[in-house]
Length: 337
Image 1 (tube, rainbow, N blue to C red):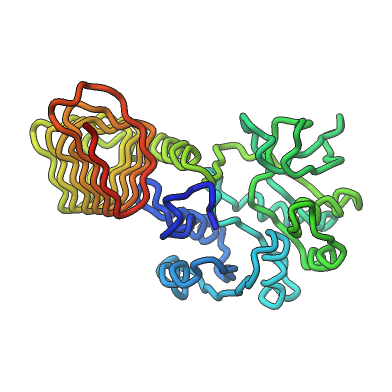
Image 2 (image 1 turned 45 degrees about the horizontal axis):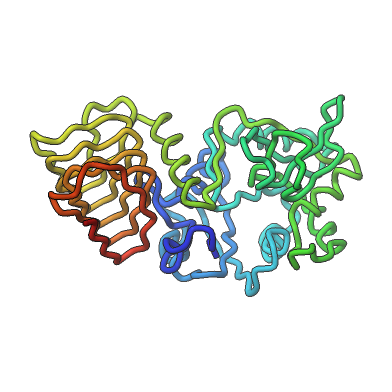
């Protein structure tokens, strides 16, 4: 339900929040297509109509998308169980829709297909705060001997990324699970059963990996995408119909969408401005401005901020220069004085 991203997720599923011009879930769809995976089941629940409206039947992403409904949010493992009939007897990959990863999945998928001694394969990424995620304990020989969900004292700097390669035997493990202390059927608990059977393998992600569960995660993901995309090298990146006047300065990397009007402003670095937004004055640094916003903040600098769509942030010319940080839901109006 994206509670850590409120107020942004009061009105929009977190998977549909854009980063650098694309909803988060579109990055997942494109990664699966790139890996040659065409048949996809999207497990939906909260605000399902908006997700289904955006993805449709998947043809615009080169996918064949069907849907399974998780009536109650009882954990990731429970959600995977909702897709049992879709999976049938096939090997499959689970890709959490709020994950972002730089690596292509092709080599991982190929390795899993050929290594018939394992029943599950996971991807790990080194992170600054592993206690926020599932964390592996790794023995001296490189094998995982324990997986722990959000441990108080992590045994490694690795986080279990939300991309899992599984065989149909996973559904047998689901039948053995009991709810955790959170009342959820945890994916980590199911994977731990494979650890105990010595049937789990892992790879370390070589590029970056990002979760998008909090506003600061959105901003970090925005930075990573802009750093490693062509937005970092374009002179004045902008979408169709966007106007930049002669008093505008662009400090890359940035993303500016279509039909925007930018004037008397400094944009960047690490700023994303979505379609139909108007930046009339001020500086925008390390921030995401969603569609159809108006920013008119005179000499102020908006930094480390996320502004929900259809919002207005303004300031009088008498306001002394300073930095401003805002997390604003859509259809909001903020006046700085």
